[in-house]
Each structure stands twice: as C-alpha cells, then as structure tokens.
Image (cartoon, rainbow, N blue to C red; front, side):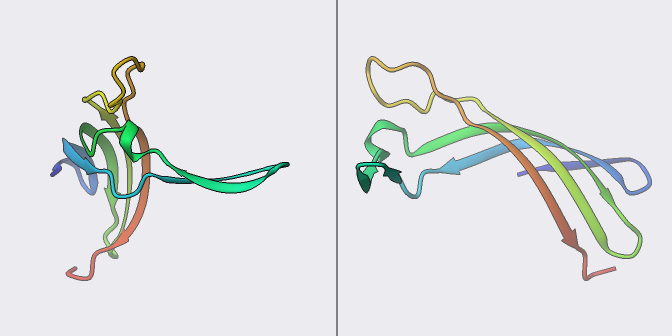
Length: 100
C-alpha cells in the first residue's frame, strides 16, 4: 500500500507499509563435494512488515520509473538463540501506463 505525492510535474514521492509473506524456504547449493538443497523455512517467520520509501517519475507518453527502498520492521529470525534478521530490499521498476 503506497501513497504517491506529486510535488512537481511527473516527479513523485512514495511512502507506505509493505506486507511480505514467505512462500518458499528451499535453498539449493553446489560444492566441490556435490550439490543438494535444504529447507530453511522453519528458521524464519512467515510474515514481515516493512516501511517503503521511494522516488519515481511518470513521463507524459506513458513510461514510468520507480526507485524504492524497503526496510523490514519485524525480526524475521524464528530461532530462539539467533541474531535479529530484518529484510532490506532495493527495488527498481519500469512501467507503462495504458490509460493516458
């Protein structure tokens, strides 16, 4: 859920919460001794809440570009003696507005 503020022309500032869900915890690996996979979903919580801040520009001909940073607000680590783990995501997007 993002709010977009347009202070000047097509330039916009984006703010809002983001809700994340763990869909898959399988991690594949390759070593000199072989390859395999492990399931790490038991070590992390299934949901996360993050704060999202971004900048974007909507061009007159329909193209738009967004740069966003998401910072996790909840501790994802579900292991009792583990260190805190929070999500941090850099997001870059190109889009096209068909309704112009």
